[in-house]
Structure formats: structure tokens, C-alpha cells
Length: 363
Image (cartoon, rainbow, N blue to C red; front, side, top):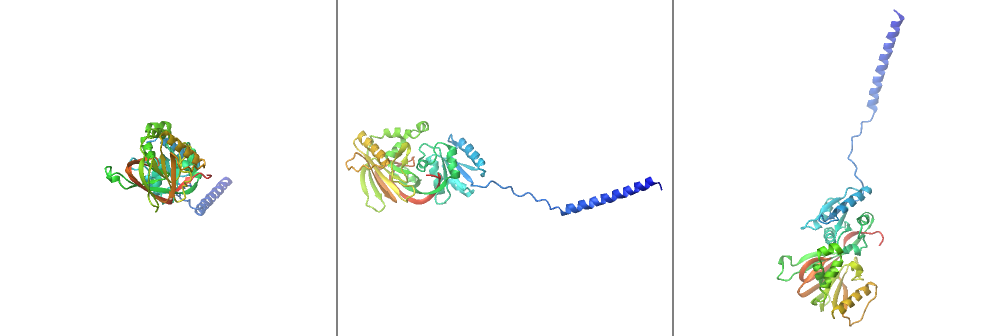
């Protein structure tokens, strides 16, 4: 046999042996290799789930949504959920729905009406309310030292602030018999201040277009028209004390006392002391009385008390857990800057520690 043929046969045999070994080793390696792990559920960003209740008719809505989404993404938070208010439901139902959807914090993005409605949906739940102020007065935001003019700063408080438990006020309104009987005895929540008389008439007459242009100054201009209005006769009863009758301009019941324009109407009011502050305000003597009243407000805001008895512009106030104001004829009533219409009786009371609000870390 030629030696070339022998060499060829040997090479063929060696190749077949090598191929067989390769196949065997490949099968063993595949058998030994762990099975690939099936893809699991995608993990979502950790962190608080933020819900935002917003009035879609306001100009600020788009800016709020864009800013909140961007800041949440930068903080690696879950995508915020937005809930639009409606005419029939200005925020209470939306806040409750947000809780059902698992929100950790519910943000009221709007004015005092939106804040009040969202708070009503969160009272007693222990879940915090954040605030992005976008109204004319922004009363609660002012009293909690929240940023008023910048959405980013306000949302930074939502993400990095501290929770504070505050009181809320409740009010039941009784209307004159000749007005809408279906509304008689209706109940409302307030966070800052409720009033009957001059202050409510001023709020009712403030022009909406002017408020959009000049803000809270519109209330001041409306108030000028009522400086010479009549005084009302009111019967005021606080807690279990005997009722007191007095002629005055307005009666206000406050949970806290800071108003726009740097005015502190109730300097001793504390938002978490479990009490309301009742202020009976009166002026006589025309413009001189109002001038003295203004001086009184400025002085008490600076911690100076005027104890003179014969004053033509005065504020008398007392602390109470409950207060009822009755007037002979219907007077305008308001809660946190929202007009309720005419009333002959306001019954108010405090719910201590009923609401949790996200506030700046340093007060």
C-alpha cells in the first residue's frame, strides 16, 4: 500500500476522532451551563409617589405639570400623577382618589379654594398635603412660610420638607329664610380665617379681572367701597360663656392670622394650638376710626398692645374651641377668601391636629 494512502487514512481517522470529542464536549458544556434567567418585572424608581391636584383652567397649569415632571425625573422618583379639578368637585374627590391610587403625598396646585378642597379630602388620613401656591391670597402658604412665587422652590419643599400637623376649622352656615333653603346648615372647612360682615363683603366685591392683574390689592380697593357701610348687630357666643351682643363691622374666626400685604390680624393665633381666635372688629367716626384700626393692626403686628378703652377703631379677640355668631339680618360670609353668600348664623369649631402639611425644613 502506498505510504501516501496510509497517511491519508490516518489523518481521516484523527479528524473523525477530534470531531467526535468536540461534539461530546460541547454537549457537556451546554448541559452544565445554567439555564438563562427569564426576564423579571421591571423595577420602578423608588421614592414617594406624588399626586398633584390642579385646576386645568388656570394659566399656571402647564408650567406646574412640566416643572413637577422634570424635577421628579431628576430625583429618580416615580412619574407623578395629575388630577384635574372640576366645577362640581374643586379638589376633594380628586384628593381622595389620589389616596386610593396609592399616593404618598397629595399636592394642591392652585389658590386658596383648591388648597381648602384638597385639605378636606385629606383630613384625618395622616397623609401629607403639599402646596404649590398659584392664587391671589395664598393664605395658608403665607402662614406656613412656603415659597409663593416659584414652582421649583415650592416643589422642593414637597420633596424635602418636613410634615407638620395642624388644626382645621369647621363652619356651619345658616342662611336667611328667604334664600336657598337647600344650602341652610351646609358645612365648610377653613384653614386660615372665616368671617361675617365687612371682610366678606370686601371679598365678594373684589373684581376677578383686577385680581388677576394686581393680586391681593384688588381686595383693598373693594374694601374702600365699604368703609362707610352700616355696622351690624351681632350676638357672639364662645364655648360655654354667656353670649355677648355688640355693634361692629365684622367678626372673624381664625386658625392663623397672617394676611396679604404684611398684615397680621391675629398675632397670637397659632395654627396647631387646638383653639380658634375670635376677633370682633369695629370702627366709628368715619375715616378716623378706620385709620385708628389700621394703626391698631400695625401695632399689634409689632407686638405693641393698645389698651385704651375709648377707641374708635378696635379689635377685641378671645380664644375658643367653638364660636357661634348670629346677626339680625343676613350678612355676607366667607371662608379663606371664598364667598359663601349671605348668612344669619355661623357656627364654628376646631378639629385639633386633623391635617398634615408638608412645610419647609427650617421655620
